[in-house]
Length: 221
Image 1: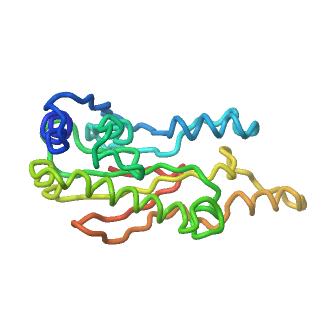
Image 2: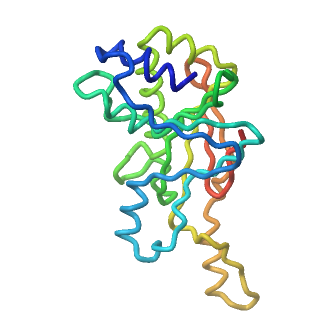
């Protein structure tokens, strides 16, 4: 359903011929992981210590449901010269494959030190979490411009904006403390950070729920 809407109905709203765009979509019927290819490549180039990273940012437990993943950022890049080609857009849209109409998830991925997720004096003063939420809101607003797509989108019983993030400063393999070894125990403390792995939920406009999940905790479909 989502593939058909994005390929045939939605482009017409922005002056493109029906069927003129490609919908980058893949389907998973077992648990899977997602990453941000550009961000992960930059991280590998700039951080030698992360060269062996598995480049996972989001883990999804499908719970037996076949999930379709649309790479929304790449999709919307095709709308050159239109108001749909917004600079701030989310990375992914996830929903069930086929005609199922139970749940849709807009997702933004990030791999940042924890201090940049909260409001800070860095690249995103509002904090990457708030920035990601803004990008998902704008992506939703773009799709709501086309009536058929809007009706489909707003009638999902469960609508989620998912902020999926990973702290590249935390080791892939948990650090275990050693009795009497002060240095080892300091590493344990720094790797745990403030335990922001818990899923945080908030209500949003149009009946969406904002959810945060921190890697390696999975998002449960």
